[in-house]
Image (cartoon, rainbow, N blue to C red):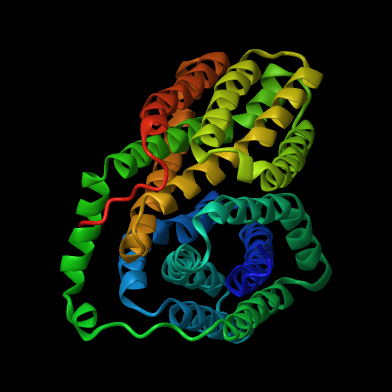
Length: 400
């Protein structure tokens, strides 16, 4: 699989970007909390700068990814991100500290254009029977940085400061652009494709998802998974302090057990993915989430909670790998960018909705009930998945 030049270079680019993003996330978070004296307003602005562009630019970026040449789009997005980051660094050195938010905002916006382009290249140049392995590799890299990223970002900030951290982020984006330059040249697009109105292409993309039964089910499934994950994501601290009576420090062990298991799970799926259908992977992940989420909500034994966290983390990559593989397999190359642009906000948007509702739910319900609701949301996802087992493998909708 790594003999494929597209896979090799896109994965290397992804590693460089992950390094820059994690250093950015934690350096800016720690810097803002230090300089604002833990002001929750400024801390919340970091999340707004990171997640806001997903809602505003994902479908737009996906539509442009289908119009533009993917290699060129990815290279220019990384170059512009690097240049903007060095501009932020200059402003930080000689102006206001508030400019650090721009570092997150600009790179988050541009990623909504480059990420669908990467999926488009993989769809075009990777054999269908290898797509699941490629998605497993993507998830393994993400799981690795889920463990190493916070430690690395904290270390760089505490050792060298925010200016150095932002400079490293800029270097990583420029390095990613240099790596992507080694990709083969893009195929030329026809004049008719170039002339088609942007709004018409955007509408065609939305209609394509809505009229494709498999994609419509996957979009709804994404929504339930995002909602289920969002409801319990802020509740882990209360599981540690209230349910288990272990204090805030125990939270790091819960996070580490889940993160390490996610890395292991991604590696296992990478080895076994050729033997498992994406529907099967997705079903395994959803059933695991149903059981472990319910168990964590009921458990009052720290050791049992850690085991459940690890089991949840072990199977959670199968959800992302399975659903991303199904999306690519059920999407024609022409619509790859737009479909990714529609699907991404479904997951992230409903996660944010779940996180927003979790505080109200916690104030009015017990932790056990909150986790039971999350478990039911995952179970609802299974309902939308089951019909996909009857779908013929490799069938895609070709009309918009």
